[in-house]
Every structure is written in C-alpha cells, then in structure tokens.
Length: 265
Image (tube, rainbow, N blue to C red; front, side, top):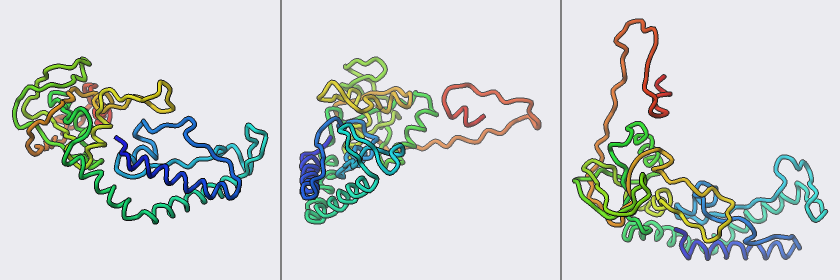
C-alpha cells in the first residue's frame, strides 16, 4: 500500500533534517519504535491518500512546562522543542520544493495506477444488501465522505472470495443489488487498506491498532473478492420520516438494531 517513491522520499526528507540537526549537534533517532500501519494516524492517512506522511514529535507535551528532565538526565526546554519542530518543518518545505515536479508527478501516478490496475490481492469488496439497512447507510455515508466510489451489483453471480462472516475462503454468492466497492478507482489503495480482511505487519510487535476492517467496524455482512463484479449506479433509497399516528403519544417504541434507532429516540 506504500509505494517505493513514498518510502524513498521519506528517507530524503529525513536526510535533509539530519544536515540541520548535525550542524547544531542536536540528537535525533531513526526507525526506533514506530511503524506505519493503522490508517487513521496523521502520517498513515495522508500516505494512503497518495501523500508523504511524516510525524514530527518531541516528548514533553502538556506536563513538561518550560522544561523536562530526559532519561539521560539532561534538560529539554520548551524553546528546544519549538526550535527543533520549526527546523524540521522548514526542512520539509525545502526538500519538497527542490523536488516539486517529481512530487506532483508521483502524486498523480499514485491514483492513475489503481485506476488501471486496482490494488491488493482482493480487487472488489461486497457489502450484502441484506445487512442491517441503518448500518449499511452509515458505511455508505462514510465512503461518500472519503470520495470512495461504489455501486450495486448489476446481476447475481458466484465468485472466489473471502466471507467476512465465516472467515473462510471459497465460492461466494453475489446477489443483484449488493453494494460493490472496487479498487479500480482513484482511491483504490485506501479501499484496499480499509477493507483488507487480514492486514499483516512484518514485526510481531506494533505500536498501532491492528483491527479496523469496515465490515466488522460497521457490523455488515459481505465478501472480499479476487476479481471484478459488474455494477450499475447506486439506487439511493430515501427513508420517509416517521409521523406518529397518535396526536398525543404516551411513549415511542423502537427496535434496537443500530445507533440510528438511538438517534430516532
């Protein structure tokens, strides 16, 4: 999900920082304990949207006041932290400006590649129309907010895929009207990351959250499919507002199936 260019440019940015830090004899570390895995951090989210995600952080936060004693017994002041952050920020602008055309070209290529080739092992993700409609609606609204394209299956078919409900791989039934999210689109890499049924990390230890898949997060049924599924434009179903049939009702009763029921109450 992370391209060679993104990794290479992160290294270029880091090396540019080291020149300024070495000049001032400031200490720094590389590749110590953090990783790029959970997609909702301030560096991973831009990365999975084609940008170069970087985290600049120096310990202390709100408890340190004007200074904090480090593990080495030295004093790290607020002024030190501000200076280090401003230096890395300006260094990032500098190295990006020096490679501006390459940055623009690679950003465009990031989206063009998934339009042509899709992304990942599973090229298509299916959300069953038979799932709880309120939960499906919440998921679809989320996809719209992320500019992720989707449609509905134009017909019924069988395909090879992974069933999120059973955790098994085999032949699955896609029915007409099921919601289909393909990785053959500009946001294909983000789709892959959000719907990957079994994300894997090279190391056995991680700082990150390791589970976020959309079917599980929203409580819907569906499949991850190796190939593509024919789709038609989405038929948006607008639910009518419920109007009480009693002029002065004593109470309201709603089935508890999703958070939408709580919002109704």
